[in-house]
Image (cartoon, rainbow, N blue to C red; front, side, top):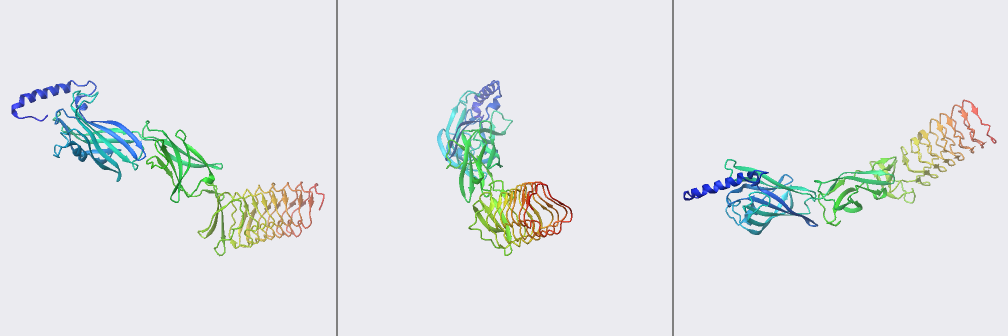
Length: 517
């Protein structure tokens, strides 16, 4: 308490004594000194499309207008970050002009001026004092006398302020004249606005022909609102497109692979029911950045796109405009000296004559989604080299599909999925080497299928699923060696089937099932 002149010393003494007794006989649950510290109440929180409106009520003990007060700067802290100095607002509303007296003797005023709040370098709204009242009783907290003054702190946050929960505090040096030896004490009083939940730990994984987005729910506290729904957006080329939505109690969303783009970012947003999809929702979104294609066998496991890559001797693209691969062409570009055809789905075939007489060079890679290599697809592609390995998806190889591909100089690997080899399919592939193994899935081998494949220099293994070896199938395969054993399923061997196969140097075993040679 501030002393009056010496003429009133006795009155001051009794006033001080009375205040001391009142403090000592206050609430049993807490000391009076603690109770006289500033208090902060959360009056209301309102979320609108334009932002968040928060009203806090700051209570300050001051029995005679000079008993207790703040000193120095009083801060508004948001999430423990100093964001705004309240002194200017207080001066505007208190009608106190003296800086030294600004926090000691406020006057009753309805509404003060507003000023901008800059939080972490961003203008997030305005602050404003209102409803300043003196001589108030703080219910439930002693002293019960009207020795408090209170003021509403109105915070109008814009849509740049996250709708997630926050801790909001008023912090400053508080001086209580009744505790002379204590001096100024750094006091922070805080309240929490619960906000809404938000997504975290987002992932997207393939599931059959679909992709599944999944995420966890995170709230600032257990009271965070779930009054809303989850929405997944795709953001690509500056545009945002809604992919789908689920209720608040669900945390996953499935979409078809064709709807997914590996070039796009994806956002998962919690949309409160108080907002529309056109409103700005801040702080309730998490993003998965575009990660590009994740290929397995030239098929992206995320979006389902497939890729056919090839090189040409003149580093130019081969014209494929009129050909049907079983999927639509998305792009056909040259990337890192390699031609890349991207399709919107797994391709199912290499079409008739598409690369006939082409300038393709180097290794041939067939996507694992291909089930058919049609007639003449690579006819006379003499620049292709190395091994010829067909994926375990191929069922049919058409007539002359690889005829006169004289550059292949490695081994031939035929998949267990293969059922049909067309006429002259590998005719003239004279540099293929090693063993020639025909899988047991094959049921038909066309005329002259391996004619003039003179480079095979290992053994020949025939499947037990064929009943006939057609005309000229192995004609002039002069490098095949070892035994020649025909399976028990063979009933007929046609004209020139093994003519010119002068390399066999083992035994010939013919089954009893043969009726015609």
